Length: 465
Image 1 (tube, rainbow, N blue to C red):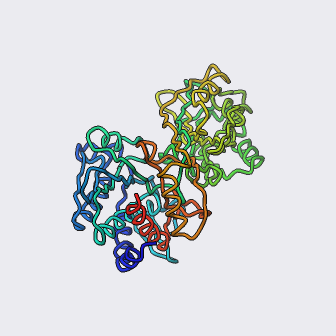
Image 2 (spheres, rainbow, N blue to C red):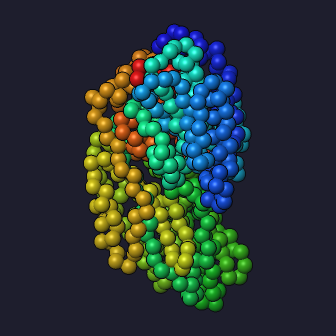
Image 3 (spheres, one colour):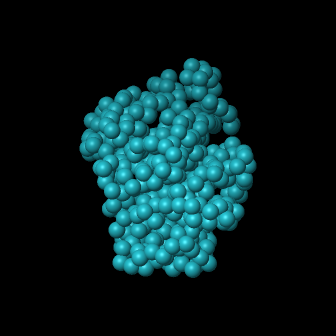
């Protein structure tokens, strides 16, 4: 590790920590109801962007806000452009969901910084910015370095689409939004919805569903369904439900609201959709219970039956016959959304598909199992695959191993980063090998040691690349 950069970063350590806390304090969650042309993804996303752009200006760097969707900070001179691609938007968080510390008020405890976005991706963005400052203040480069800041990464990537329409593309780049030592492959990401027409002219039906607007890329920790029923025709409903739930041993609470309404509230554990095995899916459990309940009364609902037969509480796709695997890992399936909209029952899935698998096979499998179910592919993000012998992969992997005194190999992941939006770009940190993945989780944090380590490693990457 460069001794000059190492010593310089140690001197500005408290400033790095403070800036990280300040940007975590901005609740930069997507606001779908924003009417502002200057803040299409919500006022707080732009506040986060302007905060970081202001930091860059104070460092003497060039900055640009592009339509409130994306921005960048740049230093250096020359024709070649090195890109560092990060994001400042975060997934939703509610302190009533079990957070030890307020999600949008950064808290330092046990040498960790707690708060939504700490490691995904605000902490790493601040580390990259101060790495740029360290290099700019100590070396003269004949190339330019640009930190690109997206505001819609957790949803539709319209930020990066906007950037690519008019702005210069990097000739080489990395994204501080995944794992060390570096990522050479990212699975295809596919969002699929299954739908069925649903009428409420029955003695027992689903009147309302709430998932607290769970994001498609998060294992849901909460789902509540309100059932309406005719208590003259539907006998012993609470007792039947209690028996079913006890059999499954699920964390589902029954509440009788009045003589004709009953609430079922399912609780689980959130995790990133790339790692559904780390979560506990509240929606899947509730659908299985509902299907058994409706069948008890002879009121079969195709979409619930379909889910129970071919998906269930499995996240590998084996019940659908899509349990694929290659060097990038196994296929994973996250049931993330459950809703009633426009007289339809809708269930939404987020799949992470191995890089060599033809993703068109997935929709075919969904459709062939039940012709009464409508299958809609809403979004596909193409996979990323770069040979392990590629200059960028080898260089970044070597930088990490030298700084960490280790010998790790490049990795493949199920997560999706901005790297797949650019050519000659891969992800580089901040997650340390074998560390618990806190992305999208309650009590998300980044250790201060990791924050400073990332700053040093990213400064090395800027110099080497």
